[in-house]
Image (cartoon, rainbow, N blue to C red; front, side, top):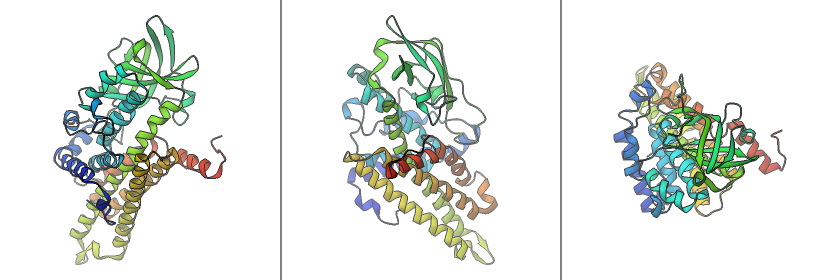
Length: 384
């Protein structure tokens, strides 16, 4: 592990074990196949059960619901190691844990928790999260998906877009307006009137399933509304969980690109010596290791704040904004160090660079997080 400031010394034995376990999983299960699946534009679905077996889903939840009662540091390290493999693999785990299991645990009934959480934790069920709409991305409060009360349940109509796992999900956490108020629903994807067409033509996150969700008079039973999810604050709380995982995941992408560039620079000989011996190459590598270290420290402190119940959404915005921006810069520099070889899939840097273009946009764009922090420190909102 790239760890210039010896952050591993701060980890508990359990947290070290989590990192080593997930790192081993990434090395043995993800890296050998990821380029093939990325080029095909498919998600390696055979990994889902394996991820469930090593406890990657809902790690921070209580054991009675299939979780491991792990710290947020441990969860972050797991996301870091998964994204060292590929952003699409980490995205799957982030959605399953932060956007599906978290809302059921936080806003669901006891019956819903017992019914869904253990199976989601085991990877027996796959979930997705439907908030973003074709015309409402950064402004989710403008959603037009509607729910109407009917006998025995609700009728959903509307559409969602850019939904990770949508076409392979068994259940969908869907946000819709009921009598003008945002509410959350657990939707069985086998329901009549539900469809999840795959979004094609992606040049980023190719090893990830991205879909539309379409609701045409979809019936949702009374017992599938999340009873405690009332108002826009509920889905925004879920997004904070996903953004937290991204902040750590970006560090994994940074490490993958840096380690590839460092190795290549020591082996690639030009003008009778390795390019690692030239000042301009060293300047790039020093930038990389410095920004990785800063990102690790930011993520670690955020995790401790979260474990202590002190983390604010603005703290999460800062970590997501900073870490993804510098991860993308590092990927581009790594491509430069690799020269022409940087654009072929024998090396991971171009794949990470392409993925990070999406990671910088989803779960709140770089600009939106800038304004979130800006409002926090000035007291003035610049959203309008």
